[in-house]
Image (cartoon, rainbow, N blue to C red; front, side, top):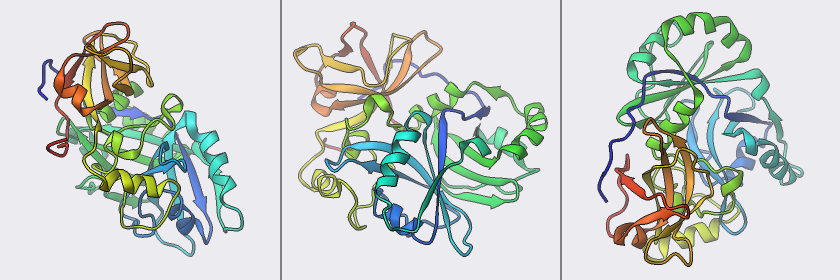
Length: 325
């Protein structure tokens, strides 16, 4: 796979992340409950790290992709789950069904929580008033009275951070922040997630992918040593029975309105789709940069395009895919 087009260079600055929602899980059984529901090891998650995790159907298909973190340890830990806002209500209702007698309370706290995305080291250094030391590796976090600063995966070799704080605190310091930093539209952050190779399941793509189809085990979203969770047997079987035949890759498409869930087709066999758009955002070339789930044989063997005719031009992924797939 080789790059055939230049990618948009991401700007540095600050984004309000209103495209995400946050659910708080509180109670004596919160950690154990989520450990039994999600693809990652929530028991071992420390208060100075976040992690990615998936929530699967019993068929091993992703219903949600999540960013997870904990508060610093007190008498009872609180676990926070961040996901696309359009999934919050249905996800929370489904999770609530399985709480049963567990001592867990699930609360939608987006209204009282502000999420800010910071792109680039130059921007992050402007946070010194609130965070004198920055987290240095992906998914490391720093907690203090100003909130939580989580370093996320880099995009285009650019460090990215997410600041989680109380909404009232955000309103108080926003005038200062907006003087210090360029304010970017939220779609720039979503574009940075695409260039970091981080998939987000949305309504259009629920139950479409086993985690490996969107590289979730490659980016630390699946732990194969932990106990059972919904769909665990199928996810494990997909991991250990031969090579992965489908993967997620980065592409550029000359169409500025590409929708998640759109099917793509190999030009030499348009009778059935060979893949699907996972996430897409408009770029500066009047097209879209996309994460595309695809049969690896189709990606390597020929031209792939939308039903409407626009060709997928592959860009380099920010991390390595296993060789020989």
